[in-house]
Length: 472
Image (cartoon, rainbow, N blue to C red):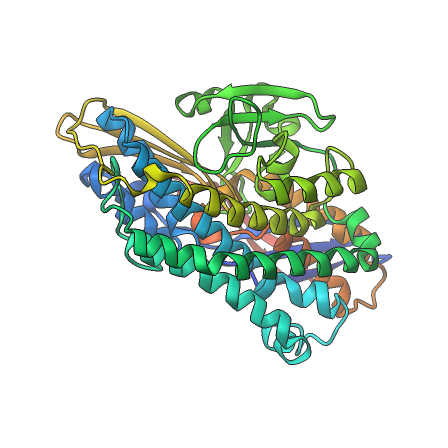
């Protein structure tokens, strides 16, 4: 028997490793996806004033802080029992769309494009963003242009590019000036052109990845995401829809405060990342996915013209329910296009310039739940406070957590497909890592569980045999 450890999994946010167990013939027996870091946000926020939660939880991540700001602020809105002004809601969504632009650009161009455009079997020393820049400089610049555009919007509207201070409980802290609005609009055509051109380039490359499309985590699962009352795609507001693998709707219109009726969580001994599941079916049968692929499977349509045309082509080519995790990349580009179109729509609304952007109140409820779609999927912040507004309990279910069980299954499927015999080639292992990158996991976002976590410590002998084991 032989054991292969991929440590660390590269080009992801956070720390993880993969263990692959081979039999004597060199075939894969089992795999494990380990998230090897743990952070205690759910515990160390206890005692803090609830209105500090957006600023604290934004520090969970430097890639998608806006998502945490929004989910936290929405939970605080519920605790204050306020309805934020229309301009505040529009500006929050505008900032959120900008975050989708910069985050999806980072994921596609900087983390995944080296695999997709240089090749899974290309030289690992050059299979990175620097190698991409050397071989395809225009494409590398395109990623920089899109990410820069999204970050500039966040900075202009919310105050700072990273951990912006302008998203607050009750709305946003300042109005949008018309000069800023015009500046954002001037940059929109160029950003949209870059996105459309990249999408065309990616679609032409798909024929080179038929085997990966077939075998990268293609096992059917359930899917979850936010939709509007008409079933349309949503990232800021909406309710949760769960869709089965066959396309039927398992649950629809699930309000934020009812999420716990449908989502359960378990901890496992080999990872610090919790594993959410669809509660009515249990942890074995209730595996679901979130994020770009899932959102496209859940929603009936985008509601913006260019993105809807592309979505129709996507579904015509791969069907109404797309299972392969490789297509997270495709879905990510479609969402990037939607986000750019939605930025234009939001800026065209006259009320976005209104001076009333924030509602203020004290504690009017002792519990609040905020939900938004982060670039990687559903993000849930659930808070409980005392009468003075001090935090007494918090639970955060982050997108990568929702995908944890599915990622584990995808790793196993991919390893069994590509790892054969005792002559292991680097490209084989890269494909196992690449299926994790398809989900664009944010592991430091996801590991917040407090209390006693399951733990197993194993002592291995020189030939790989387990000499001793301690479990809690």
